[in-house]
Length: 221
Image (cartoon, one colour):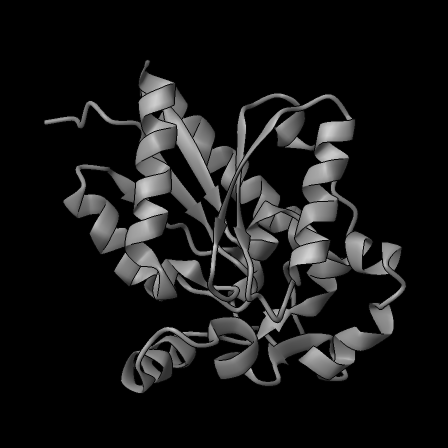
């Protein structure tokens, strides 16, 4: 039987695979949602990388279009890179030179996070779960971060942004600069703040579910 709730599509952050979102996926399914987590092409682990932001965008567009054509109402849950390139904001603050400190780039421009336990996960979860989460991450085409975004979905659809107050990958000030830019362009942004790091899908799963339930209720109203 088809769920009466909107269908959820989780768009992965860099390094993340569908299994990285298992805890959130399971919690959302328990809340009655149909959940999809397509694997982004830029996380195919090819060396040198042969896919990038353009391929990721094409996949997501096709995936969501197929759901809509099947009669689904879709909510996109975009995590980090999944919401588009962040490098433009890093450049704006004049800290692009810090990227190599956080990200370990190989000569072929594939990269990994230098310290995912601290920079990505952070506190708030036990060591065994942190280890399992980090083990799910893969090498990623770092060039994807530098590619221009050609279409901004936030110009056309309602937006909710979860601020992660203790984020060591995208600090709170950077996050707020992004939402302030969207608001300055005339789009309303509903915001929620969680006292956690870059991966609230793992560290504050139920709180993320509650936010999504509120968004879904608004969509269904």
